[in-house]
Image (cartoon, rainbow, N blue to C red; front, side, top):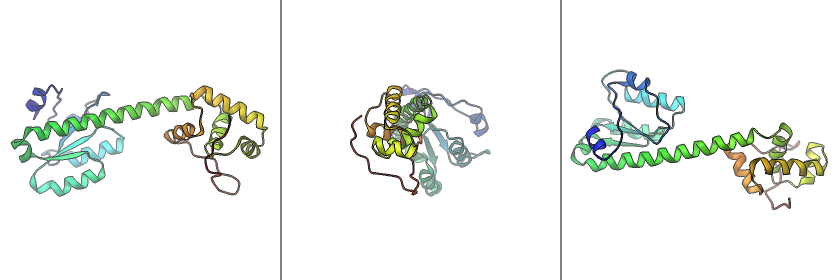
Length: 206
């Protein structure tokens, strides 16, 4: 398999066992892991995969199986693995391996892009003052400035000032953009004293 992948201009790193892989630093550029379910030594393929999940690693995993372990591979797909290949099929058709790897590398690139975007957005969120962050939580409920002012016990003019600061720091103008921004950063809408997340989103003049 290493020869097949290198012949297609892929950079390949092999490992004798799971312990050797644990010592490897996963690169930041798009990559994937081809992992045999039935490794002879411990840790086995399942253990390595579940540790990757536990560590929050974003690397896509392609499992290699024999005919007896296909059902197990399907269970691992449900747990988050990207794909599985039967070894006998790879021997007969090298394109199966190349296709699976190309798909995995695209998935990896997409995940990296999403992670970078989230990191950038969180850096913007960190620029907000505590009061601006609180105001953002009310803005994404769709409330009018006057309603937000009442909930925060501040003037409507102050709310407008906070909104202007949020826009300047994030570069986002509409409520819809701020809602998407907040969701990606894990910011939840404020809840009124009645325990409800308030009014539906509406267009509001800035």
